[in-house]
Image (tube, rainbow, N blue to C red; front, side):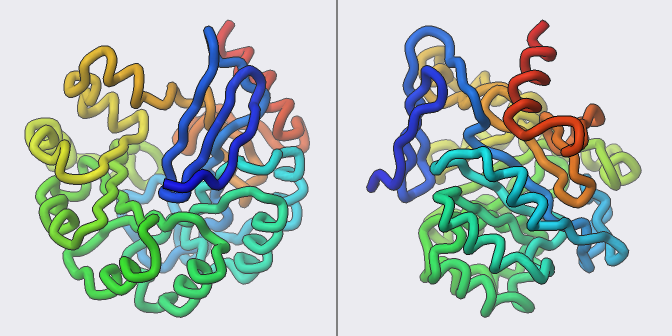
Length: 296
């Protein structure tokens, strides 16, 4: 691993490596002044019609004003990471220019895209990776056809497959592992947006199967979880106290937050109903004031 950035955030030192690894060091309790990572929705347009989409994205969805978003992000120092998604972020006409400006500012962009868009946007994806405009690709797995996934493995090692417990079958892990370079992010099932109506007994059965079979994949691939998956799958049971202390990256809205740039809202997470407008706060004021409010 090669170090690509180190920075101070309050009393915390953060080191970023080229493979996506992050190491956080502090004494006592971390006291940070800005988010380390932000999930950012830049469009609500998508033509895939996933019935469980918690962002409720459709072909009627609007694109965000990326100039306004960049203005909001201008408070952030070099080294902060963005997880950019949608909707379909590849459909945003201002995406490339936005990524260029982020790179010039030293802000690291990771892009989450749907497997169903890999064929249509394969040339754009290759360009973004080769020009180092995105550090990592998150691919939401939606089918068993990996024809357009495998060529990307030759471009970059920083591909993370996104699987939703409750939607994807746990056995898809076997195929991903067989392709090599397997990094997986397991997401919890969000009863938010379209996910409210889609939720059914099969979803719960699927989550139970993830709970049962997850342990067999530890050690065979690099697996991470969002906090909702940690809760739904009781991931804590699979770690010793020492291991949990080493690997757990913190509760939601401790080091992270969410921005809906389409509606120009801040929120703790993408499934939070409690949101604040760009017009009410600067980004850093929101992060400071609302986190303190949540702690009281």
